[in-house]
Image (cartoon, helix red, strand yellow):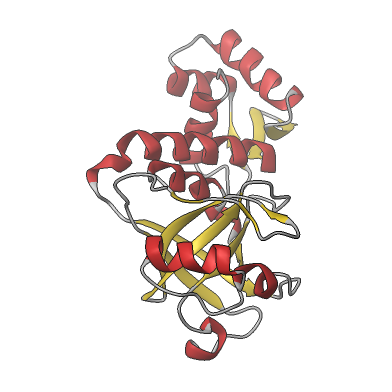
Length: 224
């Protein structure tokens, strides 16, 4: 994408945190283009809402918008996906939030429990811990795709059908757990639903708003 490289240059100059003053001629030196081309590029970035720009004597003051920062985060996540095969842990941070109370019902179903025990190596506490990822970790969430999930098959208990899903083995504050992702889910990408062999809220003395550290473990294959 045309915008990623110039946005990266602006970010390196400090335009994520603050307005920076820069002329088109100065920006041209960072982008190895002419001053006219640099000016057109900045105008296009502004029109596409990747930057905010204030014209001032001798140049302009520029700061990346949320759209611009998000684009860089996506680029960062894609590079991480390229190089994440070196065994480096994927670390995410987020805050505990209240759930809808539905996790207990689904997790407790025998058709799921038996698979969790066999494939994850633990029988989950009948409930989930819900985590809202920190804003700068949302793009990193995609890195879970670097690992193969543990596949949980759907089933029918004779009365109703329960859907399939995927689990990603993790450790949350050091405790073996798993992120569970239903096959059909309406969860936004910044939310994680976590199962564990213990009541994580009680074990870790967690309350809504507390920050937690999540380390995504590598798995060899998609089982099931």
